[in-house]
Image 1: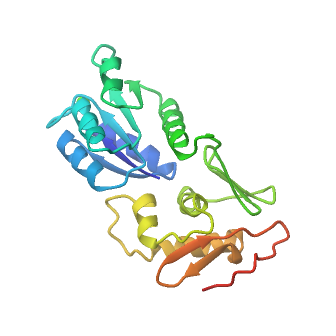
Image 2 (image 1 turned 30 degrees about the horizontal axis):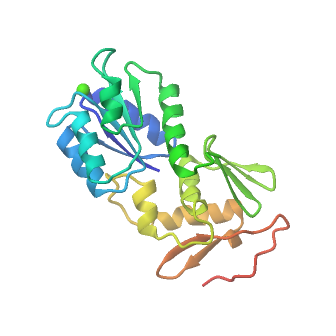
Length: 232
Ligand code: CA
């Protein structure tokens, strides 16, 4: 899941980015409304944290411009203090939710997860099940045949991208786009490193390589038997 933070209080922006990165999100940060609008228009973010009082262009305008362009990315507005934010105006411009500063990090995280779930599945179940694997996308935990498998935040994020579309091919580029952030300019083969760790932890048969295209997660039953499809 890739988030964009548009916040001109740099210390706050950096600390939010740090915390959210540790939770396994890919996070980009900009400090200006125009830049925020530009990035949000160019990249398929999963969620925006949008401050209201910003240099360049304020948060209301960033939000209404995105909505006018048909962009329905979930937007959580951040506001400095009671009174600055006009809730009616914010919701009018198309924001999904808002938080008044100072807010607790735990509350922020809960709101972010709620917005992502709301968009992810209408039934809003945080559970993704693929064969004997169950991912709890709210608690960021994975179980295989009922036993928890310990994954790092990044490993979980890679697995989640595959589990959102079981059986479908997810390209390295899509993984990089959603799991790594804007600042990542390293080797795209980093994805392979994570895939190989996931295979080791979860069973190699579960993640197939589709040469030249990407990877797919297949349902492998509780007995450990493969569902028939071999490696491409
Ligand atoms: Ca501000």
